[in-house]
Amino acid sequence: MGYEKLSRDAMAARVARDIPEGAYVNLGIGLPTRVANHLPAGREVVLHSENGILGMGPAPPEGQEDWDLINAGKQPVTLLTGGAYFHHADSFAMMRGGHLDICVLGAFQVSAGGDLANWSTGEPGAIPAVGGAMDLAIGAKATYVMMEHVTRSGEPKIVARCTYPLTGIGCVKRIYTDLAVIEVTPGGLRALEWVDGLSFEALQARTAAPLARAG
Amino acid sequence: MIDKTVPSLEAAVAGVRDGATVMIGGFGGAGQPAELIDALIGQGARDLVIVNNNAGNGEIGLAALLKAGRVRKVICSFPRQSDSHVFDALYRAGKVELELVPQGNLAERIRAAGAGIGAFYTPTGYGTELARGKETRRIGERDYVLEHPIRADVALIKALRGDRWGNLVYRKAARNFNPIMATAATITVAQVAEIVALGALDPEQVVTPGIHVSRLVQVGAGR
Image 1: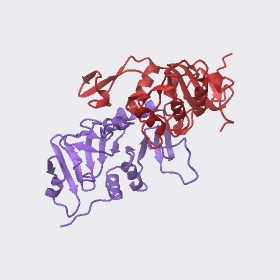
Image 2: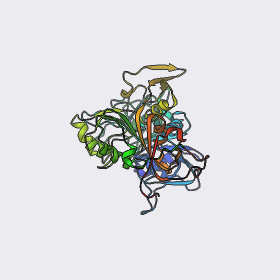
Image 3: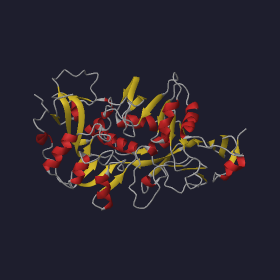
């Protein structure tokens, strides 16, 4: 039986479904940024940007960019009514202090124990850059990862132990992939749901750490 | 009469010594004091240690300072960007040293310097290669890394408006690192779009109180 992987937008919509009204949320650079497009109108969710914004709004119309108002990826954004600005130490205190409800991050690898690797492939000669990744990983009340289930060459990205340099230890609570939603529990990984037409066994075969079946 | 305003960008960056540690505000281009950086290039100090979130974009501002060969070391969180080719080339050629610091640790190390904190334990980076060799400690149920303050000889910052006492307000997300850097340097130099009369800034809205500012220079014709 065939199955279809979730598109990037379908993944974003799936994550958005789990972000409740009133949540304070940081969406990481890249794929997670797309989650904002799928938050239903009327659900008030306050987006945080590491560079000192709460209540971040969508990109402005072309021609109305304000380069003093950018997101973590340095793209122009807007401020929603009720939003606020603050300096960098306050912004990261918000993260580190556990004030954000949810942080959604991309990843190279996540381990069975919830370790996250998302800042460096450790390639020799590469110029390292970490930004706010390590603060985001450990700061929010819940850290969600959003990524493809396997690499382009088919290698599992959910692994027993990360081989890439770590961003944080035991920090990931839930993994949203193009195949499944997987929870990280003290007892290991638990698959909550997976795409139609994919058997649990086939999901396990694409995952390099043991999965338990929810329910 | 206290008057921290200076008449020119040259006067604003006068006295920066070779080997100085210089904090430069901004997050990418937002809040980066480009005119002060240009003045620093003209001033000529070399072997500088630069503290910034990034390592320059394009060919202007911090990238121009790097290109001029004035920088010995960069302390930052995110050097690699689509347009960081000046830094990239210098780094690959071994001509500039890099201390990579997680962004929140960078901010808090700067804040700690300004607040007189000797060092602090943070959970960020624990168990990663960026904490290698650093003292760690378990407090309660959690593991922490000991991080030390970053002080500077000079901070170059950008604000929107200031008065002759050095009180500053910022504009939108161009605030970022500027207020904390203002507290962490021996000499803090602020460029503003507009110098206003004492009393014109609402005291309830002042973000950086003048005590943290040494020199103030107006650039451009105001916003």
